[in-house]
Image (cartoon, rainbow, N blue to C red):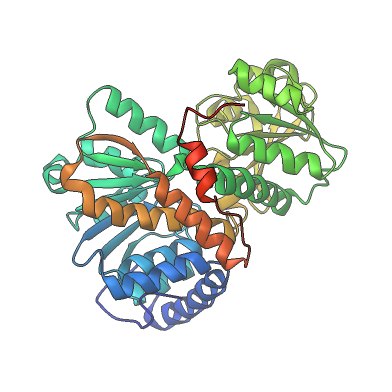
Length: 432
């Protein structure tokens, strides 16, 4: 792993007694090293950062999924000179062994798997105690907390990056209401992120989580995918590839037409609810599966959410319909028994199924996403004095650089434009 290769500093993580904690940290180091093998671009950036120190002395507060892949990103940023405090962006996705390993590297980690809501936000506040100059967010909870509860820190924050679709939705609304107080870079909206992370990463890891939790055979099943953005498209493609019949639900007529022309059935959720075996919500909105849908589902229907927050499946409605709840009938699977005897299976408590029931995106996917994140942070550190509050796209040259580095790591060569072709593309005078 490129970055803080030796333990040091006074950073701590909530966890176990010292001896057991040491063993956990060693397990975390092994997990991080395994992930780093599949992240050559980020490791190369870490080496570059160590030489150039583009973040020297910059205080960064991060709210991200505390996984091995995130640890490789933290190592690269620390190699660049950053002082980092990290909180979890989901209480069920934290890998405690990774948190322990990062604490040993001198990174202040405030995360523990399975904490309640109050502790989750206490950890975010603890990360903000660093008085950050730059923030990294995944879902906008840290930025939201800054703007509502830690406003005294706002003058010192010069910018940040947001990793996921749900967070970008919240940030754009803040900007529209002129509530956002500093510039935020929409890392989620790069071409490489949408293509590689959202489509291929979410597609594979979501089905991985469903299969680990239920051991169900998807071939021959009817899988209902709510939302046909990049993430939903990836889930639908992977499910179809495993032999499932796929139904797409949408509110956007253009996306619905796209799904139809790709060969998927398109129905409203009220109709899909009756036939679906597996339901996956991936919209960034709330109450996508509501009580009236739950009442129409067949016995044994599986409910999974791949959106960032646990609001896409109306869990409260499910609880009100259930006479009995049988927790943990399988790993990350709770069974809700309704009055008529039907059993509905909720995965990961309605939270991100790919990070709760599985391990999230493969490291090779996060290599690109986090490399874009790392380069965006260094760009922001250089340009922050010139940027007004608002949501900014990642500069196109960063997106292209990440793609070039990934191709080079895979020993793939591509064509380049000739001088004649360059002239042609920049001239309006040449015709047929």
